[in-house]
Length: 155
Image 1 (cartoon, rainbow, N blue to C red):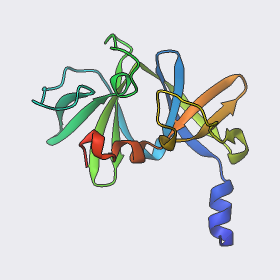
Image 2: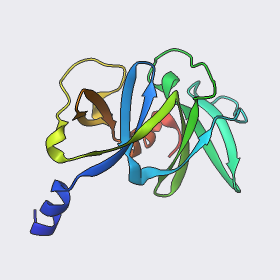
Image 3: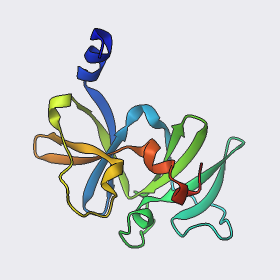
Image 4: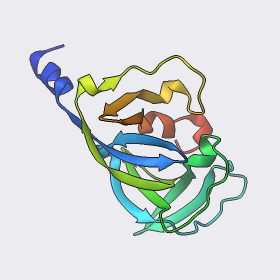
């Protein structure tokens, strides 16, 4: 690795944190386009159950993924805290429904631990690590990798 790439790898990164049930997750803030309140999407026939449908976002048709259903956490209660995080993943724009958004956290590389080899609701290949800050622990998700899977039918 050259000196510039090494310096970039050592810099702190910012993560948008959100909740699904009792767990707190984080995604790279650079993938987030905007955060919106939940609105009922238009259902698409024969889509997987975790794809709630699509919304028209300023002329762009955006698929909406319910992350509770995707991770097998049971059905969500949609309330005033439920939000849709609009992600800009290169050529695709995707929305993901989460229970609530917490804040933005900056984590340095020494605050991120490797993921332990355990069975969990999230396939460990989509987890980039566990972020720790004070008494908080974040499950860091490789959101582009997760949303790009064939099962998601979004590619």
